[in-house]
Every structure is written in C-alpha cells, then in structure tokens.
Length: 101
Image (cartoon, rainbow, N blue to C red; front, top):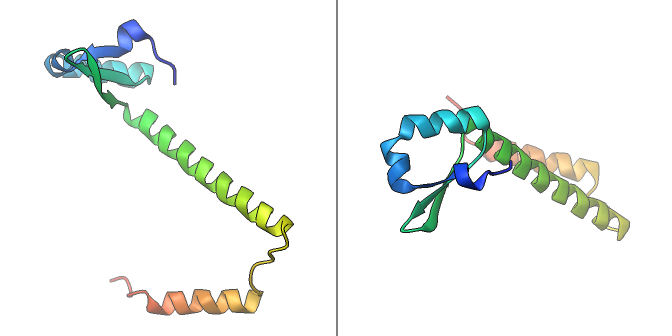
C-alpha cells in the first residue's frame, strides 16, 4: 500500500462533503486516505479490500511468529506434550463447550 501525499491526505471536512467521491477513489486505487483535522492527522480510512488484506497480513504475521516460537522451543529441547495427553485435553475442552443450537 503506497500513498500519494497530494491525493491521499484530505481534510475531514472535505471528506465529509464529498464522501461518495472519496469512497469511490478508495475502492478504485486501494490506497489509504489520511483525514486531517486542524492540519493534523486525525484518522485513516481504508477500502474494505485494503482492510481485508491488512487483516490477512496481520494474521499471517501472527501465525509466522507462533511457528517461529514453536521451532525455537523445539530446538531448545522442549518437546511439547504426548499425543494421548493432547487428545485428552482437546476432548475435555470440547465437552466444556455449550452445544450450538
């Protein structure tokens, strides 16, 4: 996601007055829009697709960090728990959940 400063920074007032125009541009160019109030950045607006990509990338990063931690723990000699014990824990957690209606 890259920004073009002269196009992607607009006042909150201008955004409010021309919401349809700005949201159409958000969708078309898929770049964030920085909204200013009294000349200072106040908010960032994203298109739905840009937000979805951001959330996907954040989740991928979170999972990568968990995997990295697991690999480091394994390398340090931590071997987790035996399979039978893991399945027992899963069964116990499943029993505690309320049934979906």
